[in-house]
Image (cartoon, rainbow, N blue to C red):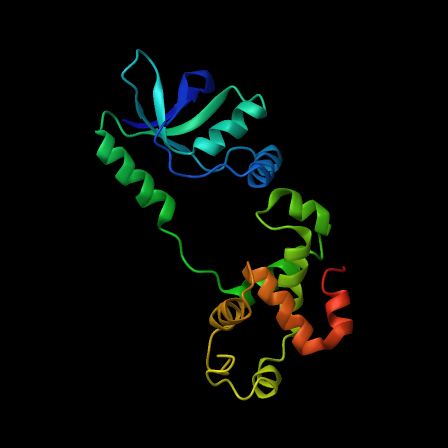
Length: 204
């Protein structure tokens, strides 16, 4: 039990892993790990077979390590635990996430784009280049003007000035039947900047 450096070939993916595969996300993860190395450890437990470990958290990172030809992985070994305990730990460590502050994200993206190319960022991040451009462009939102244009933030648009950026974006996504929050950002850019803003939303 504890921190271990284990050879990748002795690690097995959990057959009960509940995270879905996503080729685009996997490609971004591999590019991320190629650029930065393994920054996040795998969580493992001993398998029933001799000298093998099952990956509790990090199955897609294991795929990336194999694709990149990495021979060793940094792991935390829980020691022998039950299937139920392993699944509980997987959910606890995978799903304890905090909501994104989209305005802060937009500022972070804008700062990154001063140093890194948009396409380069999109290669290693869970966003497309268009989504990153949308987040960057959020900095220029005039929320008060948008609320007034939309009828003052009542139930018609649910964009009251007192609402957080995340709540406003999600309200637009739901009301307009849009697929993602990035699509809602694009819609908001169009509303606040007009057709010219829509045309420029994905540019750098």
